Image 1 (cartoon, rainbow, N blue to C red):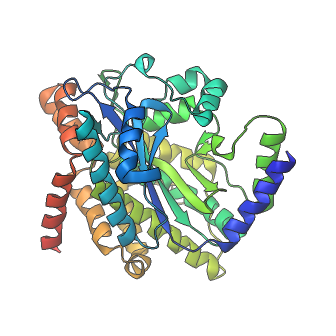
Image 2: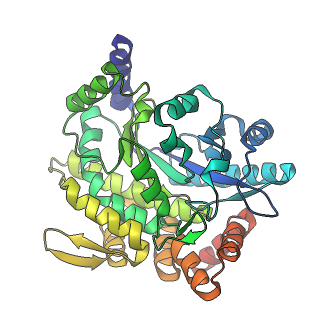
Length: 395
């Protein structure tokens, strides 16, 4: 326990010396058999082969049919975009060399969790020992965004305020309408599965202050409830090792440009809240039950959802809420060089996100495998470059 108190002191120093608005992005991919598109337990091979070109950026994530890549800590979205595109290409080349395929949807549409194996690392072995069935059942794939924020009290204030935006981030990124061989009618089945199986998950309540955060975490450690701070799996959390605010609510995106668009919106909202805090304004802190209601709307309906404005007691189409939000953060987006990616958000709203595209195709074909085959093809890096070139011409 004394050791953990020391690590919290170190975390406070990291937050106090953190650089504002750095960004890091993590993506979790499915490792697939190229013929059947079933999940295949080949992470160890992927990691051994991928380290040659990706180094420590290729990582494991619970099950052996999953592989994660992460960017470096980047000073700008432009730097993060180049890093992520390069690493995606490197990962896909590695997969091709090993004769496997990669998928990037929030859930695998027909995998059986009983066929998956937990990877043999100390961290994930502890997770399995602690959670058992809950860990075994977690065949989900997300993306996480780390934003640098300077100041321990400042990050807690922004944490408390950004909770109300989490349903919007999820609605925009929803990409998992299938699981266990059925159309679930949820746009983010991943969120429903993960948040209902894992403890200390989903929408957290407001923290209030750094002292309250450290008191909570210290209590978890002293009582043996957790052995690592990352066993708090909230949809947003202060990351004590990195000195960042980590947004964990989003589904993995098939197209890297969509990953960057969602990440840019998160960065812009964080910068907006930081600016308001620095101006001495009190950041609004939403009631957790209200955020949970909108979280459910995002899980169920994604970009087709309506979000409740609890102040006005009205429903607002989430697409309208996203457009309003992009307008609110436009000054910060311009300052941070996010223009290309903010334009991509408007494009997603127009043509549909991953869940909407899959659902439309399923309604036409009634064939989940055919839909997933197309979704896997959307992941190919060469397609992303073609789409980016077309968007650049339009701009």
